[in-house]
Image 1 (cartoon, one colour):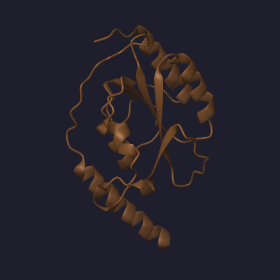
Image 2: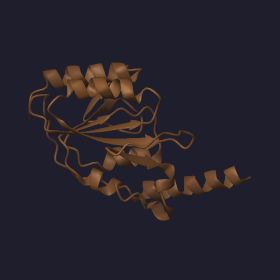
Image 3: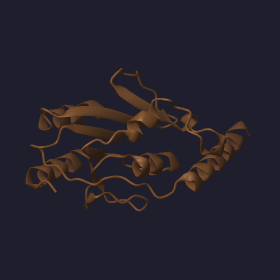
Length: 173
C-alpha cells in the first residue's frame, strides 16, 4: 500500500514538472571534436558505466568533461565526486527541483550535451530539454528531440561510436 501511495505522489510531482516546462531559449552552435572545449555527458546509471566512460574520455581528449547521472530508484552505487547525481526523490511537489547541484549544470552553456540515456521520464525529459548546451546529441527518442539524432542504435557502445564519427565529420556552424 505504501508503494502505491509513493507511486501516485511521484506521478503528481512529474505532472507538475511537465506543466512548468515551457519553451527553452538557447544558443545553438555546432562544434567538431577539434573546436569543442566543454561537454556534458548525461546517462542513466548502469553496471557498464566504467567501460564506455573510459572510451569516451579517450575520444574527447582535451575537452573538459562534466558528468550528470540519473540514478533509478532500485539502483545502488558508490557516489563519485566528479559526477552530479539526480534521483526521482530530487523532484518536489509543484515540480520543484530539490537537488541544488542540478540548476547550475542545466544553466551552463556547454559546447555539447551527449545524451546517453536509455529511457524517458519526466525528470530526464526536463533535464534534456532545459539544458543550455549549445548542441545536443543522442539517439532518437519519442519524447526528446536532439539537435543531432542517431537512429537504429541499440547499445551505448554503438551510440558512442556514432557520436565520435559525427563529431569527426562535423564542421563548426
